[in-house]
Length: 121
Image (cartoon, rainbow, N blue to C red; front, side):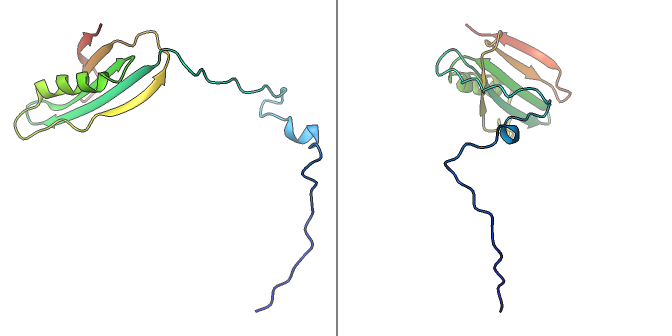
């Protein structure tokens, strides 16, 4: 087997890069520094579970609250509507960030229409 080595271009890692190469943006405007994410504050947490059964066809439970207790609350609502042989799916959690309305649980049908809503305190 034969290998052919060709010279490669060497860059000085300590020199400053050319401004024109690193300052371009997709819109053509000047580069703006990224803003830092807040390290504390009220975040909205979404918990989601579903149930498929003969009695209800398909129900989706989505809850929004400011702490992790929303997972248990959503699971409780789901368990009230499950029928024999059909269990609630494992609850999924998602951190959404600050939201205006973050204190409710929604029960939705297979068409994503809100069937019932509970407001939390």
